Length: 336
Picture 1: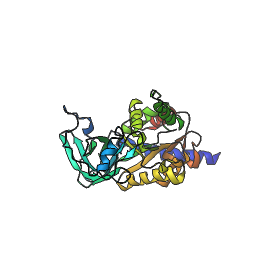
Picture 2 (picture 1 turned 120 degrees about the vertical axis):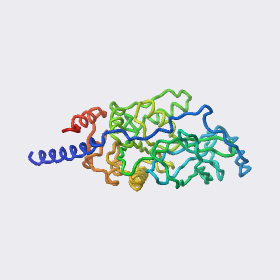
Picture 3 (picture 1 turned 30 degrees about the horizontal axis):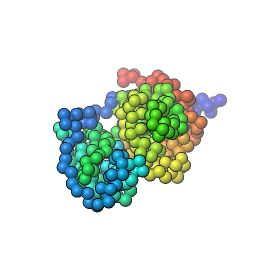
Picture 4 (picture 1 turned 90 degrees about the vertical axis):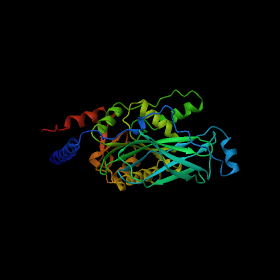
């Protein structure tokens, strides 16, 4: 009994210390949201060019463009890697070795960042080395030859910004099967299935956003579910944040060597960029291994579902309401 009380007292002190440090800067990130600015003419009308290869025109005729772009995050006055994938038709035929221009939306207008060629898998990457001011930006990736495009968001934040990680499937949704139900529903052209959300998920995401955390939704979903994921987060009222999905199907496999390693690598990229990954939420053993591997304190790893509490993590039951209540009740006031 004495050991249990000692451990409970220790965890309480750790939690209160962390919560106090969070309350000192308990304000939202002061970032200008350039992505919210609008223009009468919409996206810029830029000149198109000829295809680099004759086969490319045939690929573009396969079907509708189905392009994807990855959200990105960097710190003030640092460079950033910007990535997008270009495919066409229901068969997702990759557009290879074609030029893509990349533009950044600011409230003063569109800024061209550069151009890059797609690789054999339809992916392109622009390593932008210019200095960017803090803010949230929309990034436009435009196929030069036909003008089709994909968009994503770019967060530029101060070095040392605290990050709150959220998995999606089985963490914010009530189970991993929810996304499969939505995709199946889309395939049969019904398209009205909405993955069920755990209670309190929206509120706890906003709790962290209001306290100056950058939210990163780190999921093992493959890249082609980007729009499904963005739409769901917005429709459910989750706090705005960076969305990171896998770039290969193999990384989505539910094992430590696949999705576990993908998530660990993503967390280390955030840390290498100068961000502080302080708290993480998940449901799977792969989440636990990635979070612990990245050095997130076990007192700040919140796990919901069958694996809740494993390896010394914090147990969450049937939703996020109770966790949010506990965080709010322990939150000291600034004058305490």
